[in-house]
Image (cartoon, rainbow, N blue to C red; front, side):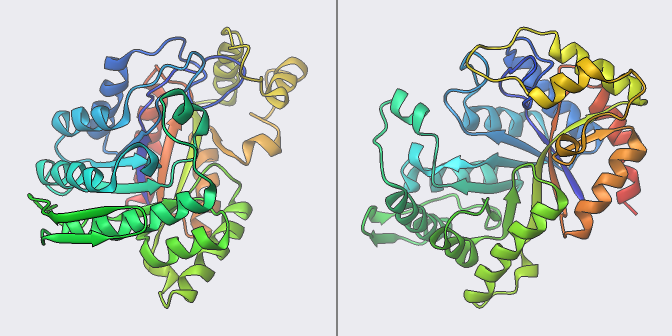
Amino acid sequence: MEFGLCIPCFANPGAAFFRTPRWAALDPKAAVEAGVQAERLGYDSLWMADHFIHGFDGGILEGWTTLSVLAGRTSRIQLGTIHMSDAFRQPSLTAKMTSTLDALSDGRFIFFFDAGWGLVEQRAYGYPDRPASERLERLAESLDLITQLWSGATVNYAGKHFHTRDAVCLPTPVRRPPIWLGEVRDDAYLDIIGRHADGWNSVPVSPQQFGERWAKVASACTRAGRDPDTLTRSLEIQILIAPTRSAVRQILEECAALPISPRIPANATIVNYLNASPADAPPLPEDVASHWLIGTPDEVHAQLEAYAREGVSHLMLWFADFPSHDGMRLFADEVMPRWRA
């Protein structure tokens, strides 16, 4: 199993308990330093979200700029996007950007791509609204065009949505970047996964739900005449790891005490648990714990085993105790080695 860090690129403090619940305010340099530290600790990949507005105050680092900085600050670790939005850039530009980054980083780029579903931020920044069917058409065309341009050949492309004339994308990538797609939507989207994806990622779900989603992806691969087992299976998930259960609870209490945006609802299940349970209770109710990795190193390892049985081979981790690096270090020291044999 490989382990990746999701760069904490926005602050979302408080009882919503979403991604960065212990971080009161965005600090761009601290976000980058977390990625640098992850490489030092032996993590396999860094992942950067692609949004314009996010978090409790709307503040978020621009994804591609941040990933480029991380490429220069690291030397070994893989570099990936999280749902890089097709809606934000022409695919010919995306091909040029991704090819250049892969060349400059010695072939470390993973291309996790998506059609772009963040309508609120797209409207805020003046991007056009498009129906879901058109977004998927554009996604399929973009993947065709990008992979052609990555080859270094002169590309004359005449699609329904995109066109090039004598386009050349040099330098080429060191090797064709792996294409990852995420989630399950309708059959049209699943068929795009079946035709194009080298990897598939799920947002936080239980092991059982992951298996149910993967079954749909596997069927799409079979329809496309591909072996589903050739795809990397990845899980993006929140993690809270500490030496003891009481330390886990203390971090949750610290998060819950931070001011929360009135725009973002609190996680009522966790709040009620903190209000009602004694200090030595298990970390979280099952319906929440099944969508997190949470607890002591032994407990987190056991949770990972359940995902591994569903074929998960790459994790994209949001450490809920950030801006502390304690969770990153503890996971690297006491969990990751059990999966390196």
